[in-house]
Length: 382
Ligand SMILES: *Cc1c(COP(=O)(O)O)cnc(C)c1O
Image (cartoon, rainbow, N blue to C red; front, top):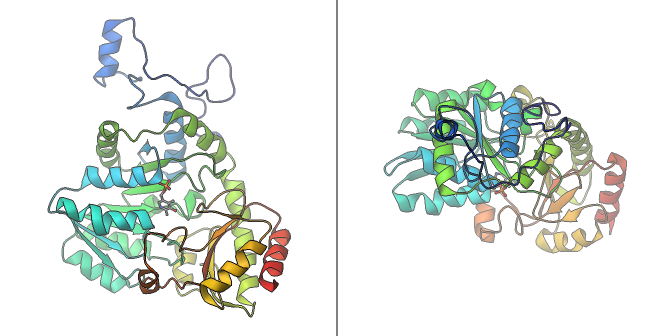
């Protein structure tokens, strides 16, 4: 699916690769045909803010990989998430989610949605009973993210999806960290999956994008809002994401192999006080992760003895890692939450989320595993 999915839909002049269609509008000399496409009676494209052939192939490939009925894209992951929330919620709606969602998503819940009269209750991320209790008090949308950023907490998806449905709420899962290679929330009953395609799906840190996949009626509502909101995925970005996705399976498997080796190495290092990786037997939700994931992913985080000062001393010694706010790329990328995922928070807020100031987020790339282990070892020694 990653290699061939959706690819043969729009090939031109015997090309073997999907074309990048840089056209704002699509012309129809025949009035009746134009009218049918414009009114949705016939398939086709009218205007680039709404749909585009290259973008449609990207949506189709993600739809196949996640096993959804429909998919729609957006200019970034945050555009996909915020368009989805604005399309499905109304003043008076109540959202239940967890404290550890991605920093931008968390700001929607704490600042922007409440301003529109939407109640957002954020429960302790790994307290399943508390989440179920919050859902029982009324829930119009259950929003989950697992594993979480940056502490790799794992939510019990089948159990929470069941609780959400018992309350009549659609359940949305941010599957950015796991990718469809390692976790299929729709197969577990979730109604929608959202992605920052910027991360693992694209995998090359050269294009921003987002996507919403799942139930056809819900996806249609998101699409209808997004085409008016205007946060459209650019065809060139769609092409880069598509090209990246062809190697998704190879990349993600190698990244997970390396992440497991790195986590194991760090767990035995005397300057490392904490390692967060769902693949480790010591991870508090390891059993849940093993039950609902087919791989543990390429993301981990670890705390260095000595706090932020130790992190500042350590980071410059890394030779084989971008020190950047990205993740999921072919190059290893590291950074402290203070400058990446939780830059919007104060140190006290980070502490309350269980994010020590000495934490480093590590996104394993596709480099040779032994090279990466050696690089980490020498940087920690330095
Ligand atoms: C990066 C990220 C987002 C936001 O995606 P953008 O493409 O940066 O807008 C959402 N969720 C998770 C888990 C992320 O890592």
